[in-house]
Amino acid sequence: MNNNLIKNGFWSTYGAVVTRLLAMVSNLLLAKLLLPSEFGVIGVAYIFWSFVNLFTQSTASDFIVCKGIEDKRYLNTTFTISFWIGLALAFGLIAVSPLMAQFFNIPNLLWILMVFAINLLLSFVQSVYSGVLLKRMQYKELANISCITSLLRVFCTVGSALIGFSYWSFVIGDAAFWIAGYILLRQAAKINISFQIDSKVKKEVLSFYIGAISSGFGYFVNANADNFVVGKLLGETSLGFYSFAYQLSMAVTTILTQAIAQISISVYSQLADDKQQENALALTIEEISFLAAPLYALFYLVVDKYTMVWIFGAKWLPSLAVMPGLLFFAYFRLVNGPLTTMLYAKGYPSANAKANLVIAPIAVLSFIIGAEHNNIVGVSIAVAVVLGVIWTLYLWWSACSQLKWSMMKFLAPSIKAASATIIGILICLNVNEFLQPLIFICIYLIFMRCFAKRIFNKYQYQFNHLTNQIIRE
Image (tube, rainbow, N blue to C red; front, side):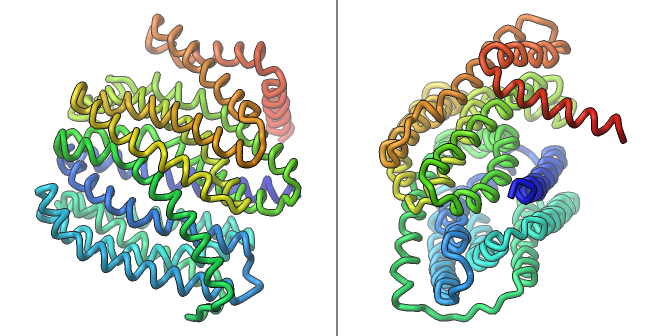
C-alpha cells in the first residue's frame, strides 16, 4: 500500500509540476508579447469560464471514484447526466454572451464565450473518463495526458501570440487543450459507456451534483468576485495586473492541490474508519503546512522589483503590490484543499457549500470596499483577510462541527507554520536582498527544530536517507 501511494504520489506530483511549469513558461512568454490590457480582456472571459466550469469541476470524476465503475448503471447515468448538463450550460453561455460583451464593453467577448461553450461540453464528458482512470489509479496515464495537453496549449498559445492574435491566443490554446484532452482520455479509459439513465441511480447522481454545485457556486463567488470587481470598477489594465499577480501567486497552490487531490480522494474514500480518516487528514495538513509555508515566503522574497523587471518587464511592476495579500490567501487555500477532498470522500459536499455561501456576500462587499479605497492593493488585502482568515476559520469550524472532530488538531500546524514564515520574512526585510532567502531558510529551520521537532526530525531523516542513497550511487 505504501509503495503504491509513493508511486502514485510521484506521478500525480510529476503531472502537476510539469503542467504548472509549462503554464508559467507560457505566462512568461505572453507577458513579453502582450499588454496588461490584453491580459485584462481574457481575465474577464475567464470569470465566466470559471462560473460555468463550477458545474463540472471534478464532480463526475469524484462521484465515479466514490461509487466505482463495476456497476454500469452508475457510470452510464453519470455520463449521460453530465453530457446533458454540459450541453444546456453551453447553450446558456452562448445566450448570455451578447449581454456580457455589452456589460463589460468588450465586443469580442461574445465570440470568446462561444468558443468557451464548446470547451465546456468537452470538459463535462472528459471528467467522466478522468474519473475512470482515477478509480483504476492510473496516475501515470493521467500525468502523461496532462503534460501532453499542457504542452500543446503552450505551443498553440505562444505561437498564436507570436503571429499577432493578441488575447485570441489564449482562446486558441484552450481549445486545443480541451479537444486533445478529450481524445486522449477517452482512448486511455478504454471503456464502453452508453447514453442511459437508470431511474434508481439518477436521484443519487443528481443529489451529488447539487451538493457539489452548491459548494462550487459559493467557491466561484469567493474565487472570482475579486476579478469581477477589479474588471468592472478599475478597468481592463488593472485587471491585467491583478490577474497576472494572481497567476504567479497561485503557482505553488495549483501544483500541490492538484497532486494532493488526485491521491487523497482515492485514499480517503477507501478508509472506512472515521478515526483513520481524521488522522489521515491531520497528517496531510501537517505535512502540507510545513512544506508549503516556506515556499510562499521564498517566492515573496525572490520575486522583487529587480526580478520582475528582468524576467517579465517593467510594465508589470504594479503587480508586485498585490503579491503579499494573494500569497497569504494562496497558502490557506492550499491548506483548505484536503478538507474539501475529505468532505467529498465522506459524501458531505454540502458542508463546504454552506461555508462558501455564507462567506460569499462578505467577500464581495469587502472587495468593493477595497477597490474603492485602495485600488487593486485594497482588493488583495480584502482577499487575505476575508478569504485567507475568516473563510478558513469558518470552513474548518463548520466541517469539524459536523464531523465531530477537533478543529485545532488540523489548524494548529498551519498557523504555526504561517507564524514562523511571517516572523522570518519580517526579520529578513532588514538585511541585504541577496541574503534574504538564505537567512530566511536558516530562521525557518531553527523555528522547526524548536517548535515542530517531530516534523523536523522526519524531514531530516528523509533528507539524510536520500543523501546516503545518492552518495552510494
